[in-house]
Image (cartoon, rainbow, N blue to C red; front, side):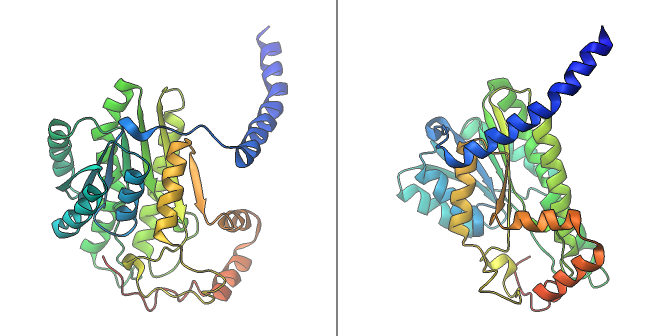
Length: 303
């Protein structure tokens, strides 16, 4: 009897895969039901500038009830908070280094007391050292891992339990296409983003049976912010940097439609496929041709 049941499951499995794929294709061409943000409290780490600032504006524009900003630079946080408040959306900011576990837990407690329960957590905070392994300072390498990787552990542990209690929540990660295809000169960043991707992939699968709670991971190509200032690709017209406003718009849309993974631009999917099919020697030639071997030589971005 058990063998027949196993055989039946095995025979149905290809059909299930086909139906899931078909459903995904249909989603591309139909308007999906969107989450109403009117009751949501959105926390954005690294919310004072760059993509984080645009995310704050977009969530406010899409009707979020409250927007909360975390970051290390009070001046930037205050400026962004004032911009959001002008639009009529309630906004708060707290100085918090997500790489500091105790500080995250303490500020999470303060946030809940002053603002309320966070229902959408956007892990956006990140730094990049921008050097090769042998040229990298040990403390700088640790800083990148603490903020880009471990920071997600601490923030998610701080806010996910309450989301599960409420059966209402969403965890978002602003990752990078470099988590799937690394480049020289940013070994700290690529490593941390690969770890972050694995974290989100595991978390997404772990929450499949948790009603009302979802995850979104966004993997953008090089984005035009001060973080990667000076980085140059060989063919900028063929591979232009992404507009941070567009990244923010696509991220909020993905949250509202409960989309698990978003690659920006969509053409980067081909890069992932090529990595699975081509030999290493061919991939090396692609890196050389595209200029990714030397793109960080002129890096002078913000760490």
